[in-house]
Length: 65
Image (cartoon, rainbow, N blue to C red):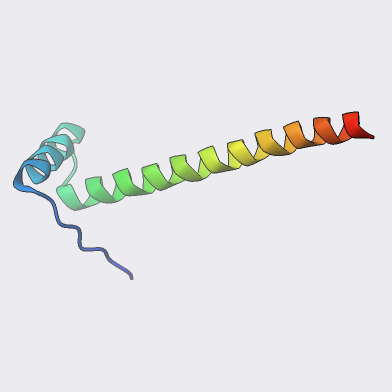
């Protein structure tokens, strides 16, 4: 299974550990979930933008006919 080695500053690492602790998770699963959630949010935003552009384009095309 692929893995990823990420470098953090001491302050960033401490913040990440504290966030994981507040979430009741170990650091590694917490970091995994944060990254997966962020990529899912990004993908959703891109798909929504593409849909808005397609709707807008379709309306313009109808007016140009």
